[in-house]
Amino acid sequence: MAHILVVDDEKEVLDSIKGVLEDAGFTVSSANDGLTALEMLEQNAFDLVVLDIIMPEVNGLEVCRRIRANPHLALIPVLFLTAMGRVTDIAEGLDAGGDDYLTKPFEVIELPARVRALLRRAPGGTLDADNDYLSTNTIHLHTSRPEAKVGDRVIELTPTEHRLLRYLIINQGQPVSTNRLLEDVWEYPSGVGDPQLVRVHINNLRSKLSGGDEGKPIIRNLHGKGYLVDD
Image (cartoon, rainbow, N blue to C red; front, side):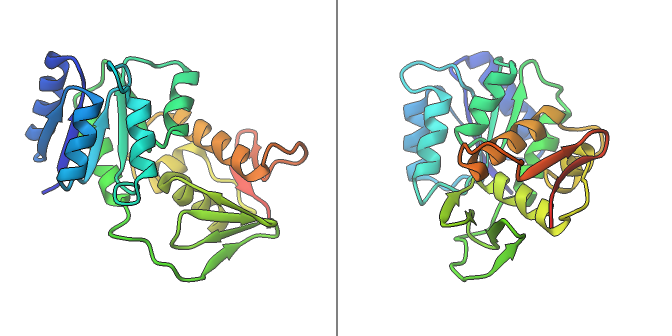
């Protein structure tokens, strides 16, 4: 049974989220601030973190950054659950290392569905250190470490970015729709998941892979068809 850490500074919200996840069959622990959450993560084994952003002292974005910077915690899936729902807020959360982003108020049925999807695709244990790559003419993606090479640059990826880019490379030359990405990469049931989640992750990947250079994008969007990387 998966053990989930829920972090929110509002007790009523915290209790509500905890109740929804426990009813769905998960073991749930809670923290009402970022520092307590980080201490609990160091002392206990958790399979996933549900994280608010607006909290005193250490906010959720900083908590997520510290999780990703800690080699013992870096692969734990992080789901932001927050009232901050602007596109720029979503981008900031995913850029901090979040795997998914859900805004309050949320549908009771959707939270457990997203949690289950994140758990299904979470890497198990330490990633291997072999030298296998999936490649296009431009990108060399390590198959087990969350990193890619473009030219001489080694680019660190989040687990979700790694999974998304791997899927696009396997399907290189073929456009993949947003709905298909939500179902195959995020493993959400049909109708679950926000298309904006895909757009923000694609934009983050483009920025990392291009290194800020202008010109032909490494990941293209064919209007009405989807995203692709070229052969």
